[in-house]
Image (cartoon, rainbow, N blue to C red; front, side, top):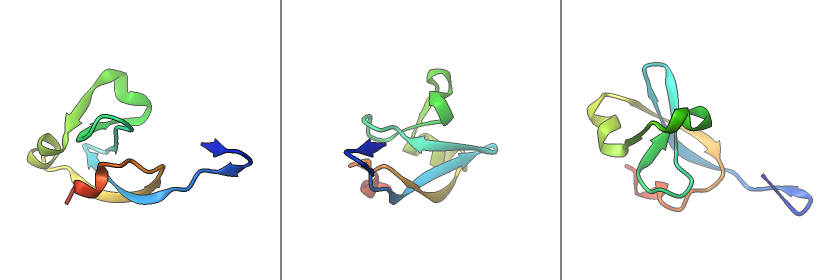
Length: 71
């Protein structure tokens, strides 16, 4: 994302890896995680991913206000 002539700041934020697919935090829906390109509308809650044994990792992403709540 470009703001003015500068790239928008990215922050180290959690992602989940499930069955080899990295799921990213939805930009506006808290505690919803989606695959690359939105994965055809499929999404998971944080609780579902934890229960499915998804591995939490971290990547530099545009800020999402709610991800600081994810432990």
